Each structure stands twice: as structure tokens, then as C-alpha cells.
Image (cartoon, rainbow, N blue to C red; front, side, top):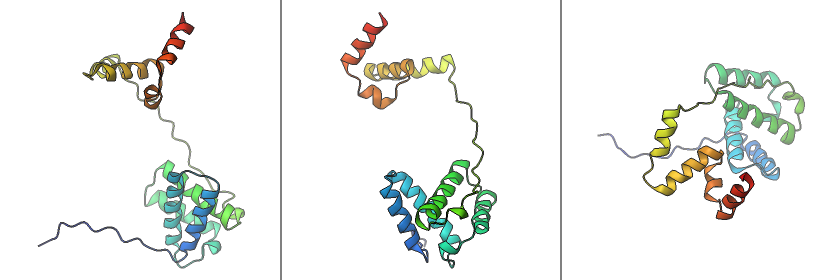
Length: 169
């Protein structure tokens, strides 16, 4: 009878795990955000695991490009994830390994030019009428009319609104 227990994934250690640690240290010293550090570490660790038996400082430009091609063709990574992988690799070779020539000609993906999703007048009306709570409805209306973010609306003070009304009149 199969067990329904979910076991945590066992973390795979890279042969040269110290390279990932050194990259993380540089990122912390440069005051990168926690999420960026986590993303770069994961991307770089996956990269060095691909060449697990090769010391990272001995990986060639050709091998770096081959890995990126594999990510694009076989793993079908998105443009943003490809950018993250390139950034992590570049950061390692420029700041940690001091081998900037290896990543000097790294190609970044072309930016995707997406048009914003615009709501119809009926959709906006339905959205603004959806909340039963007057405070929530008012917040949605302020967000929609002013372009403020939710956090900015939450932090609004009565004096902010009075100041705005005086400026308009």
C-alpha cells in the first residue's frame, strides 16, 4: 500500500559548493535583496551542478554558452529566468573568480514587448461594485482613480486627501 507521506527533497550538494557560498557572500556585501540572492544562488548552483566534476574557474566561455543553449532549447526557460542565470554566472566570474573575459560577450535575451491588459468599462464597473464593504470599495476607487498602489492607499492620511483637494480647487 503506497504511503501518502511527503518527504522533503534531499538537497543535492555540488562538488564545488564553496563557489555558491562565495557568490552569496559577494551578493550580501553588495546588499542585494534576499530574493535576488536566493535566485542567483539557485541559478548558479544548477549551473555548476551541470559541470559538477569541473572546477568553476576552469569552465570555459564555450561551456557557459552551451549550458545557456541547453537551458533555452531543452528546459525552455523564460527570458526572465535566462536573464537571472546570466546575471548569476556573470556575477560569479566577474566578482568572485575575477575572470570577466569569460562572460564579456554573454548575450541577453531580447525583451518581450507585452501590451498591458486593459479592462473594459463594464469590467471596471463590476470590479468597483464587487466589495460590499464601503471602506474596501472606496480603497478600490482611490487605487483606480489615482494609480496608487495598495500599500500607498493603506498609508494615506486624512491630511493627504485634504491637501490634494485644496490643490485641485
